[in-house]
Image (cartoon, rainbow, N blue to C red):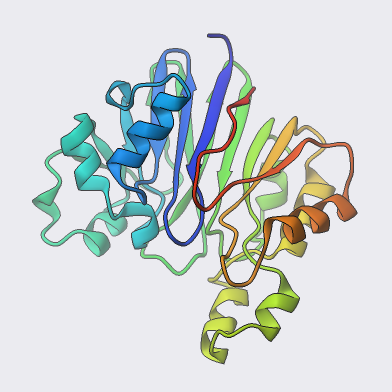
Length: 254
């Protein structure tokens, strides 16, 4: 296989996991869905979960980490996460036998594949987003960002493909059933990125992108058709998809 492939196995507040493969290296980002779902969905794409080389965790919220220990036991892989994420999510920390910590902003190397970790302002203990690089191609895994922080646009301008948080529609959030304190948290500086914010970021900085997959859509404050419509109104010509909250995506290639 030449280049890089990526599959969203599931995306949203009920569970997240993304598979990336390049140069013979197989990585899994986040562990928010059952191990059986990982196996079934990867098998349907011709991949074996037991061949994964590492699990990398973005932050300590349960929809991203709840099955990390299960994956380690089931698939026999090491778990990479920040010290803050390890201590916030696991008690005692030793429950995962092979937990390897990294500092935010560092670069992880897996053979010919590098993973740059980018600190976010999301309300987690020590959250990160990711840029996966292989032979000059760059994939962004940009969810749970908090807000459009300084440097995010410049980062997007370097990417060839992106899983981009597009969490909520402002009108749906405003008129929706959530209590006001939760609405403030979502649209605040440590919450989530809206459809409008995500669309503007890609419009202004996504000239290099070959495709974008909208990710981490809210089940109460967004819909795939609304998110896609917002993005298409902001820019045109870019292949655009929305990751499902319940099933795997297509295989994306770079």
